[in-house]
Image (tube, rainbow, N blue to C red; front, side, top):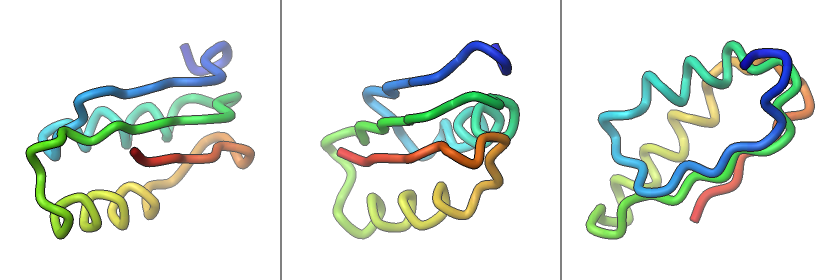
Length: 69
């Protein structure tokens, strides 16, 4: 996975899956884009906190762009 994954779209993301996203970002060396669609039942404050936390995660790929829905 780490040398082949270039794009990922994570639908239905909840805060319980933060470790998985962190691990993917840490290991995926050629990842170009990660799009995260957060569960619709989360309030805007929780969504903002998740966004800020994910943006702090270290990335194996310097070219990786993260987008949030």
